[in-house]
Length: 85
Image (tube, rainbow, N blue to C red; front, side, top):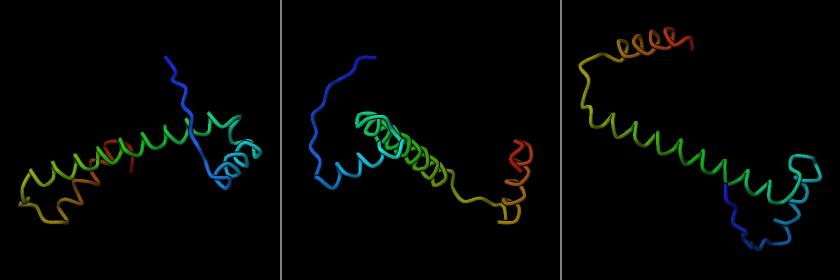
């Protein structure tokens, strides 16, 4: 994968924070820390996009004729089938 060199500026407080993360052994250098932040932000945005899509699909599906307890039973059954309950 190709890489791109960036130049960014931090406040002294931010720089000290990054240095502490490295000193505490969480990262080996500044670049590794920044790449980790970008990856986590990408994952968070992907999760948010999936949630928005699910919400839109829910609104588009209309009103259910099932009761809340029927819906909960269906959810529990699906979770059991998936091995998550």
